Each structure stands twice: as C-alpha cells, then as structure tokens.
Length: 157
Image (cartoon, rainbow, N blue to C red; front, side, top):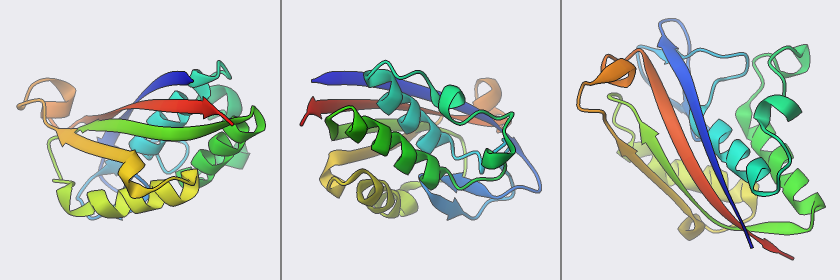
C-alpha cells in the first residue's frame, strides 16, 4: 500500500472558464493556469504521482511545454493513472477537499465523482470530494484564488 498527498492553488480571474473536478462550473471567474487550471484534478495527479515517488505534475506535464497549453486536465489525470498502473499499482480510494468561497460546488459533486471515478477505474464510492470556505479570510476568502487538497491510497496489483 502507498499513500500520496497533493495540493494545488490557482488564481481566480475574469475571462476564464472555471473547471473543477473535470466539470465546467458556471461562475464569473475562472482559474488561471497554463492548462485548463483544474485545481482538483491537479491535486489528485500530484497525490497519485507522489504516492509512488514519481515526481510531481510539473515534472510530467511542465507549464513550459506547448503540448500542455490549455490541455483538458482529465487527460493529465488519465496519464497519471496510466503511470500508476505502469508501476503495478491501482487506486483504492481518494479523499479531496476544495477551499473556495464561491461558487457552491455541492450541485456538481456527484458529476465530479463520476468523471474522476471513470478515469481512475474505481467506483464513485471511492472518490470523496468535500468543500469548505475560509470564512472570508485570506486570498481564498477574498475570492482571489482557490485551493484543492487530495489524498490517495494505492495498492500493489
């Protein structure tokens, strides 16, 4: 068994789409990044890679490469899972927490779980997604950015 943790941060800006957990969420701001800036999928990728000491998302999908410019982060998650499988491991479960003031993501959680579970070849019961605010404190509270944390458990196949 291997445990991995991941974290990701992105600025929120006008004029960008907001992608979280592979789902486009209607909002007046979106996350700024080289890819689609899906903070949740990036944290999960880092957790998967970290569990097997394979480096981080920047090592495998550098923001200096045009190959990854505006890429759909679901592709990055699939490639991360493929790296895990190549090492002879499979995902048992994941637990993730989003930190953002708005929008409320509860209406989208089940679709996020379905999307992530399908890519990772697990059930929706194996994908936990929670959200919290920072009670208006800090850059998250001022709606300048958002954060995601993820923990994964892998098993040797």
